[in-house]
Image (cartoon, rainbow, N blue to C red; front, side, top):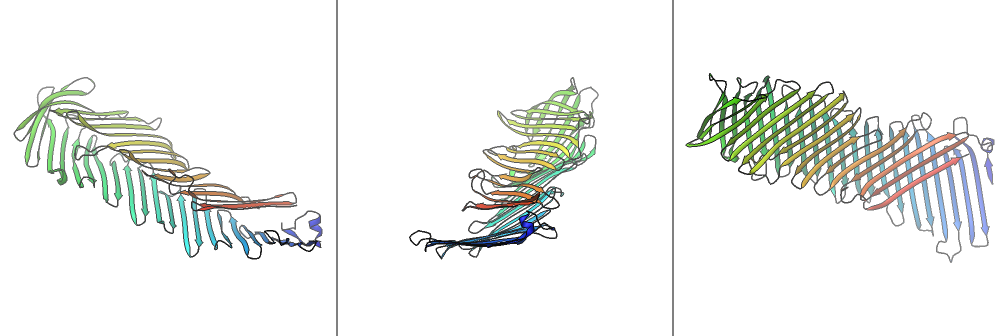
Length: 559
C-alpha cells in the first residue's frame, strides 16, 4: 500500500521547502521460509524506513532487521541533521550508530554514537567555531567510563597570535602545547610551553627593535633548570650606549656571566669603554675594565686601558695610525700583574652613515686574538634593512665564533619578511661541545603568515613552525626524536538558504617517525535545491592510532 500527496506525485516540495507527506507498506513471501516486510514514511523534515527479512534456517544469517531515520530540519539560525541506523541479525547480533550535526554560520557541533554486540557504546562529541581568522575545535571520546579529549584554539588576529593544543588520553597522560607570538614594528616575541605528564618545557624569545633601546632575551626552561641569554643597549646619543648583558646556563655545573657598563664609539676622539664583569662560576669576580682616548699632539690615536681582574691589575695602551676608509692600525702593550704581552690592532668606526654603518675591531695579544665586525645596510626606499655581526675569539689555532645575521624587508603595514640567524659558542667563558644556533624566518601577507623558529645544538635541533593560510592553519614542533603536529583544513560556504562546510583536523604525536599514526576527524555537509529536488549529503570520519577508521556517509536525493 502507498499513500502520497499530489505534490509528491508532481515532484514538488511544500511552500516552506519541506518534504511532501508519503507512506508505504510492502510485504513479500516466497514459500514458507523467506519473508520480506518494509514500511516507511516521509513527513516534512523526517524520513523513516524499516526493513525486516526472514531467511531459510540453514543459512548463516537467518534474520535481518534494519531501522533507519533521517532528519534534515531548518532551525532559526541553521540546520539540524540526524542520521540513525540500527541493524540486527540472528536475534542477538547488532550494530547501531547515531549521528547528530547542527550547522549554522560560524559553528558546527554534534555527536556520533556507535555500539555493537562486540563493542560497548562509544560517543564522539565535537564542536568547531570559526571566523575569518579564528578557530576553536573540541573533540571528546567516551567509552567504558574512560574519556579522551582533544582541543585546538587558534586566533590569528589577536595580539599576540595564539595557538593552544591540549589532549588527554587514558594510559598516555595529558599533553598541553601553548604557543603565542607577535611581530610588529617594535618587537618580535615567541613563547612556546609544552607540558606533558607533569613535566614542563618552555622557550621564550623577545627581540626589541626600538632604535633607542634594542634588546634580545632568549630563555629555555627544562625540568633540570633554566638557561638564558639577555642583552640590552640603551642609546644615550649617536654611538653612545649603556650595556646590560646576562648569560645563565645549567650545563657544566651551571653559572652566570654578567656584563654591564658604558660604551661610546661615536668617534675616536670620543672613544670610551667602561665595563663591569662578574661570573663566580668562571672565576671572574667583579672584573673592572676601562678604555678611552688619550690625547696627544700627533695625528696618531693613542688608546689607554686599565682594570682589575681577580685582584690582578691590568693596564696598557696602544697607538693607532690612520689609514684609508676610516681604518686605523697600530700596536701597543698589555700588562697583567707582572707579565707583559705585545698588542696589534686594527680599528674602524663608521656609524654616522645612514645607508651603511660599519665597526671593525681586530686585536692580537700574544697567542690570543679577538675579531669583531659589524656591517649594517639600510635602504629606506625599498624597506630593506640588513645587519651582520661576527665576533671571533682565538687561543692559538682554536677559535670560537659568535655570529648574528638579520634581514628585514617590509613592503606594507602587514607585508614583510624577517630572517635571523644567531650563533653562540660562548666558549670564551665555558666549554660547549657545539655552538648554539638560533634561526628564524617570518613571513606575512595580510592575514596570512608563515613562521619558522629553530634552536640547534650539535646534532640536535628543535624547530617550531606555525602557519595560517586561507584554507588551513597548523603548527609543528619538531623535537630531536619526534614531531608533534596539528593541522586544520576548512572550507565553508555560508549560503543563506543551505550552508555547506568541510572540516578536517589532524593531530600527530610523532609525525616524523609515524605519520600514519594520527588522530583525525573529517566532517562535511552539503545540501542544495536543484529545481524541484533536494540534494543532501553528509559524512564523518574519525580515527585514532589504536582504532580503525569509523566512517559515516549519507547521500539523499528527493525528486
